[in-house]
Each structure stands twice: as structure tokens, then as C-alpha cells.
Length: 301
Image 1 (spheres, rainbow, N blue to C red):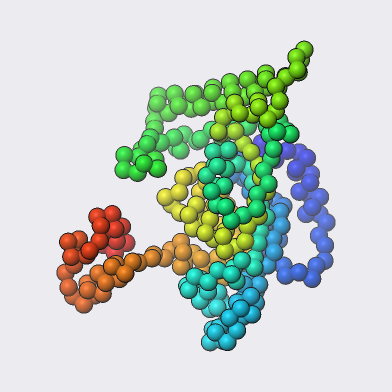
Image 2: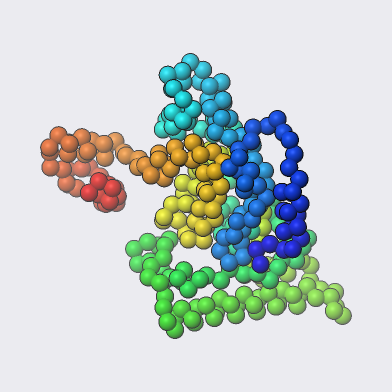
């Protein structure tokens, strides 16, 4: 189950006792506060706290850049200007703290984003629950033949059933052994910090993850991308939905310039200029590598 009865009661109590504040408040984010948004089979994302809103970004920019932003007519235009020109510090004025429950193998991928504060559930002090991520059948895919980091065709029939059976059996057996090693029924029992090393990578862990908006946008640009691994992308998309309600102007600019935009090299710009002038420019005349040319053609044809 994503939440224990104790956690459900805590959320209900937190949401039942609103307090007046002089802080900037985002009505969109208030709707998400403390609630658990389910992800995968046993995971979730919860907003625990946040600071700032779209206005905080604008306020910081006008303090930082002064007269340099006076030509921008409104808050939305200023935020789009900041995003377009890769300004970062105004977006760092907003922060969010998330409570995330996720499989260990996803956490190990996630933790590579080092520009955040993290406090993880400790299996040295506590016993992990018997909860494992088991992919849905449509997520069981073979290794891609063209991408060493990606998935290929979805497994089907007996092969899918065989893989699912192995995943479930291995997870159950390792957790059984974990419990046996911890057991103190007539014996001393192994220390928790040692017994945990036998657990599978698909067991669930939890952490609090606090990050500013600038670095959160970097996380989302990579992990909400269609090429990202499905499991971490599911979390990124859930977080992105909260961000959209929290800072709608900044999120719209992020979608436009980061998720929906493209970055061109100097060579790519030169090729486009030559094509627009009517010149026929192919791979041999581009000066690009084959990989660069392939990526260029995927966008520009």
C-alpha cells in the first residue's frame, strides 16, 4: 500500500489545521500540500513544504538586474526572458521539499542529481517493509538494439510470464532471508546494517528531498524527457504536475524553452542559414559528425 494508516491520519490532521501566514502562498501548491500522489505500484510523491512562487522569481530578478529588466512589460515576459537567457539565481529563490517513496534502483539513479538536500529512511535503524516494484507487463521490454541504455520491444507471452515469475520469486526469497537473518527467536540475530545488504534493488525506500526550482527544472528536463527510463520518468511527471500548479508562469516558460525547445550548435546554425538562402547542404557539406547530423535531421528534416 502506498501509505500506512498512520500516514493517512497524519495527512488528514495536517490538512485539517490551516494557519494564517504572511508568507507568499501559491494556491495551486496548497492543494498539493501533504497529499500523496501515487507512482508505480507502491510509490508516491508528497509535497511537505515549499517557499516562493512566480512573484518571488520576478522580485529576485528585479533586485538582481535592476534597470536591465525594465524593458520587460510584465511578470510573464520577465520570467520568459530569464528562462530564455539561462538566468538561474532568480529561480533558486523558490524551493520545495518532497517526501518520496521509490524503488532503490530508481533512488540510485535519482541521487546523481547532487544539487539537493536528501535524508533517506535508514535500514540501519529500521526494518524495511516487504514491498517491491514489479513492473506492469507493458513495461517488460527487451534490451534495445540501438541504444545501450534503453529498452526495445515489449516482451510477450511465455517470456513475459517467465520474467515476472523470476522477479517475484527472487524478491520474496531475499526478503525471507532478510527476516531470517534479523530473527532473534532463540538466537542473537544479524545486525540490521548487515542484513540489509541482501535485499533486492526493487525494494522500496523513502526519503525527503529538498531542492530549489532552478535545479528541479534541470532534474525535470532530464528525467521527464521521453528518452528517460520509464520508472524515474513516472516520478518526474508527477512532480512536474505539482510544479505546474505551484509556479505556472515559470513552468510554462520551462516547457517552451527547455522541454519543447532545441539547442543548436554553431555548425547547425550555419547549415540552417545556408539552407534558408537556397543552398543544398547535405552531410558531406555540413562539417558535422554522423551522430550530430542524424540528430539535426530528426529535428529539421
